[in-house]
Length: 237
Image 1 (cartoon, rainbow, N blue to C red):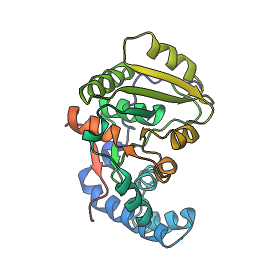
Image 2: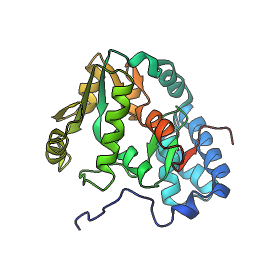
Image 3: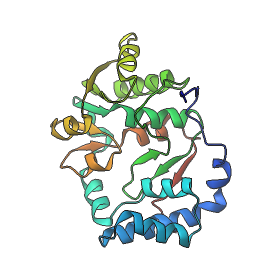
């Protein structure tokens, strides 16, 4: 079935699944799963134990997985994270779909998660196909405005070639006057991990590599979208 969405907004049940009354259990589940992952438990079995304990739905379990992280990995990621002041005069390499979909979700009122490592993620993600939505242009406008304000010398956006419509998104970006250089490559993760520049992503594999990274989606949301539907699951339960 083709993707006919015009927004990257909340799931119809999200107002129940991520209501304030559910947050303590989601935080506890995130910390419990992170504790188990820190002790080398396999993710599927650990998630089943935690999800069953807190009676989480499939969507809530997906959120907890995206927010959880082995404690030692979280500390390593935080140690390599840069402050916005470090961006001036630098090249910033952006994990395109990773950052863009999170900002689209933020603009459309969808649920955002702050994980144990401090990175902001959405639940939507991109799974083999990307479709522009009404919030896409607003998300790119926001990125352009803030990256200029922060004095970034060069912004390079990397898109996954295997994701359908990546070429169309590059063409859409290049039709506008946004200060981005867009690359469509087979594996952005590999390119970003080896670029030597500051990286913007919330992808765990990238953040576990020895890269300097900037929490771009979270910084944009907290600076410009203070009323976004963000849930901090890094806080103690």
